[in-house]
Amino acid sequence: MRKGTVRTRSVTALALLASCAAVLGGGGPSGAAPLAATAPQGIQQGQQGQQDQAAPCDVYKSVPPSSEDGPAVKAIKAKRSLVIGVDQNSYRWGARNPNTGQIEGFDIDLARAIGTAIIGDPDKVVLKPVATADRIDAINLGRVDLIVRTMTISCDRMEKVAFSKPYFNITQRVLVPRASPAKSIDEAINGKTVCAANGSTARSVLDAKKTAKQIVPVENHLDCLVLMQLGKVDATMTDDGLAASQAAQDQTVRVVDGEVQPEVIGVAMLKTSPDLTARVNQVLADYYASGAWRSSYERWLKPYMLNEADHYWPGSAAH
Image 1 (spheres, rainbow, N blue to C red):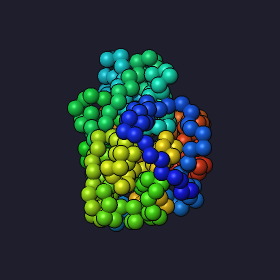
Image 2: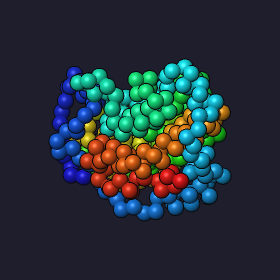
Image 3: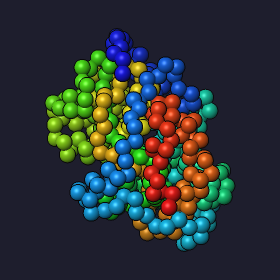
């Protein structure tokens, strides 16, 4: 990343930027700084190796795909609506377009595809914004039927909710102001005040590292960007997709070199609805096979992620 000149901005301007960031959608800003490209390095094998060493679970494991309507799917059709928890604050993944008022992005394309395939009518698919920290409760308390919101599959979460087969490879990255001298993740967080969303994998990584001077928890990833704009935190940890989107939104921040903890993200739902999980897995397989997953990646993410689509598709998710 190139070093830029720090611009002095008033509190009013900062508040305006924060407000705009929350409703960004559509096309990205010209000259936006993309996330540095990295060559594929056997992400899936690396993830599996970490699981073998650290936890007794397989984050790629899910029920086989099926097009059959089981009890959970029939219940959704009977109530004539499917409620999907999504993000509305993550640029290019799930953000509200100020011109149309619609939430749009890579995860939103997928959510609509899943909803339409299951219930048969796109008008009956309800997209409900859910905070990062509320994702598991939203499922288990019946507020939503599914979560499609950059949700990392982990052993701990697999004890609480069911997951589809993975649909995206990610890693954790760190954002800092462009004026920061940090050249690596360790330099960016050791002895620093670092922001992460409650309930996120980034928060778990920071807790495990125990090198930050202070961890500042927030409800949504975008809140970290606002705190960095205000000078209240030194760095933000989040996944590489969201890091890229924030760097694209605000060119006074940059992503430092290095990444940690390769992971995958999936669709989450109740553990007691295996037929719904099977149906979602079938939709994911069809979505990828049709080229729709790749087209959505090309539209929303490639300008900022740089790597080709195959780098981010977990191969086992198609089986």
